[in-house]
Image (spheres, rainbow, N blue to C red):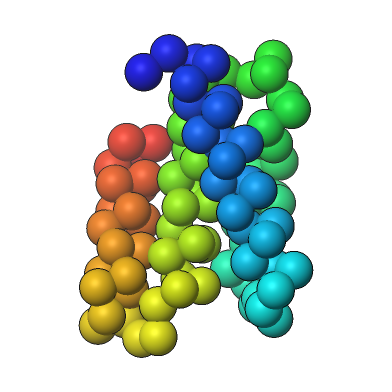
Length: 90
């Protein structure tokens, strides 16, 4: 995927997280890493890899928000996204 596509997905996931945060009480711990990483959708000057990492972090947070426990389907998705992110960005 090209950088523009990654940024579009990053923007979409960011909007999803904002909507989830608005509707439900969200633990800030779930997003702490994303905010500390400091790459946001409007930072178009950042590398594709940075946006990809931020996208995976948001995807993991969304999966955590929607899972009821670590054994649910979405909980397993969050774990898989964490493994993929760590493997790709080492």
